[in-house]
Image 1 (cartoon, rainbow, N blue to C red):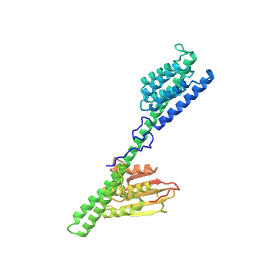
Image 2: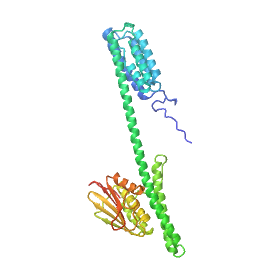
Image 3: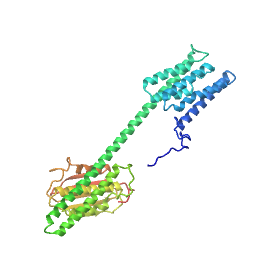
Image 4: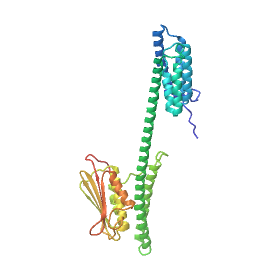
Length: 395
């Protein structure tokens, strides 16, 4: 077991290895606040009194020190700032009442605590800022109005930031939920396609091997070879989906196989023929490179359509036609069987996940899908996916 030791040179960690109760950003904020208050105190003292008290400068800087721990203990930091400010006001004549240290401390409390605590902190900040040796207990109206206005500006700014942060967080959660839902739908479609196609093929091939085991061992052997290959492909594709689900959990040293595309349609047609459904492939138009997502969707649509044909068409033949056009690509799978298709008699819609998944894949790319029985018998699935003129990728 390897123990990772903290870097002594890292921010917020001293040479002894113990973490400081503040960060580099907190130190920068404290330094900036101290500088602003010190400059304001110096200028006001010079213009009103003709000199700058050294004790006052020291107390101004010390009053900003509690801001170092404002994130960890905002209420205690705010109380320390007010206490040190009160000491400063009672010992040094000054016209500054609501200085930068009080502003930052009050802002932090409002951002991080409940409404009741924020109201109490605001009242305490206004009261303590008005305490002065020259004006207390009857401070001028101008000081009261100025201090209350400054506190109101801080409260409004902190409240607006809280609402804005909540809106951003809610939007982020909504986008994350939508992304998760979309990924679940995609994985569900992939799982359905893998299970429906490969398991159906394996079932048919195993039945064919059993039927021919005694009378034609060679046919049975070929069926078992196809069964093994289909199972291997199913396992590989299932593993790819599991890798997506566990992405980031562990590093996979073995490279995964590329996702299938239109270049694998010939393999689908060959598997369909071996599984008992004679099929043919016809490619029309000038072949072009397709984006991987488009190629995968076309592959899955053809895969699902051939699987449905094997399930429902009975003794039939299937034909796959892939047509390239300048503005899109169309794929059509038809059969001449007596079956009515996967959705039930007379229509191409229904509750089945196969047609729903194919239609979702087409809509995902801005395309359309039509499915339904043919007039002369059989069933047809036709999908068209649009392409931009500059779209091109390896298939």
